[in-house]
Image (cartoon, rainbow, N blue to C red):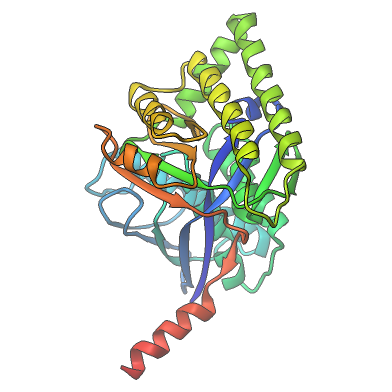
Length: 350
């Protein structure tokens, strides 16, 4: 068995605009997806997913997930989960030049599905790493990021950016602009995540922004303005001590830009009443700034606050299903084989 994990992410700035070549700054967070892979003797793939914000399910299939596996959960959620896993399998087969390789795959995740925290990217990144290593091939994090992007690009009908998969594969804070992806220095920002229990349809939301942008010049300018916000945020981060504790001035400047970024995303129609309620609750709780993260439509907001005040405010906000702190994940995709074997040994010794 080969086991890999990869982190989720939050967007400090830049979602949606990154699809049109503007820069974005996503940050990997310590909420991870773990994928375990065993090679089979046939060409079938069996997937067990216990907690992708779905009821647990097991599927065995051969070939494409267009076969619509028969499981007792909504079809759209099955396709969302299985489509990414299927694409990861195809990338691993291609990397190892073994087109008929079959796998038993188990997916576990503490990242809510479709909530703006990069659950699909984390599953794809961890899946490609685990499956290729199971086939005897070692890929670099950059190679994994590129293949994971290709997988998401296929599943999302060409509307994916490299941001989520690069952040998940490399870890830390990253800067993405088109095909230019690189890690950047950032201090340990005090992220607080609020989750409304929902999820947005990424494809539908991205298509909605595309239509606005093509119809109205001011919508195109709004997208460009988000890019300007990102560049300003980059310049602020560049002056920060990556090894130090963020000071109040830094948090105020970044928080103000996050507030501005959220307003622009609202104007593009990708927020929701529940997300806006969480954003305003976080600000009322004295967060330095708060915004939606990811595609929008439902899911998560991210706020900056080193104190317990924002967490408390969100906990008492109607419609908030979960609140948690999220540390910056300095490590991206990683092998969990040693940890898995150690746990097995510990269990045997008991």
